[in-house]
Image 1 (cartoon, rainbow, N blue to C red):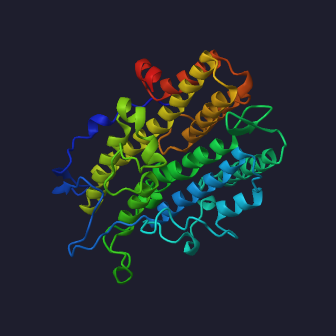
Image 2 (tube, rainbow, N blue to C red):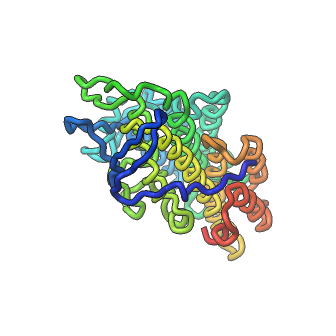
Image 3 (cartoon, one colour):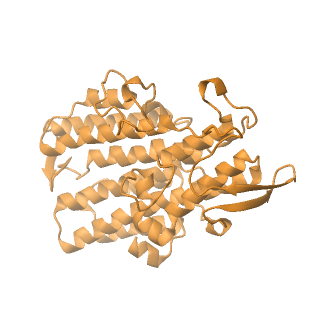
Length: 378
């Protein structure tokens, strides 16, 4: 594994400042870092767009709502789940999380979650098949095959695993985190045109590079005015907060890095853009691994206090899903093999001891250079 130094020291901005830097052409440039994720061209037209990312988050929200019906004894249909995943043959109910939502009408959307899961990786098909198999497992369990409802959660009677958490939080890693850290901030999406607006007549006032950065941001949060303490945050906008924000500073660092990098792109300051890419990658990985540690701590406490097995298993499933996400970082500290080994160590929740849970937790903390004190209190 690779242990990276903390890049927080590279962030030296306040809410709104004048940023002086040196571009790749060695020309001095000065520009403003806004305190909200709002950018416009010289005519005042907004150049920010990430509606497709909001649509996919709305889709995962509705998928999760449907999966959780199994917790009440309802039958979950695997084909419907897979249709939702591929946005094919399914009529969305929520039709966007709000009438004024940035994502708009889901039933008019051509977006889907499946083709953005592990997209561009050599093992892309295997990753997507993993989620399809989990959907099959959830459906079978809801029909009585190896399924039981414990503490209000439909879980595997043989291993204690909980499909809803493995799918929802797993897609946060394989789809949302992967696209933030690896796909949209990778060379193929960053080494593109940054001079010509894509299509002003169609309202696309952004350059190709600006848009790709926005798409990465859109997988992090819907909020232009991001507040890590807001009650409306969801997915990574939510999980970068909490104890991860309090102890590791992840939510604040990510918000600042996204705004700084976007301003740098608009000012054609590629050196600063690249610095912010590394910061986003490090802080997202801390959010992923820190959240896995958070749930492992909860599971350890459940086991120590004699809490119901269903509650402990629920927390272990959340932990495993976030551990799975660790293989999707653009500058990952863990190899795929190391991640799969940790997941293998969690193959049977019902037999895990407190020492087993701590061993996995400590491996993550060491790999991410998280102190013992923070590890214990996440």
